[in-house]
Length: 74
Image (cartoon, rainbow, N blue to C red; front, side, top):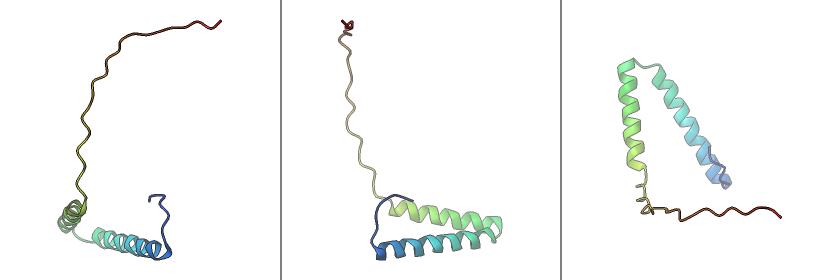
């Protein structure tokens, strides 16, 4: 869970969503293995559809070392 502060309504909505996911995964665990796999793939597909696009990384800049300076303490 993130550390973001939520309003009471947001916190309630969040807890409801978490409980529903917990219930869904508990029910999934009782299904035959092939049905579990189908359900989990469907969940993964829906999650990936809701993900926001990843921004393009900024262009990487090369670093060039021009020298090292060493100073002695007095």
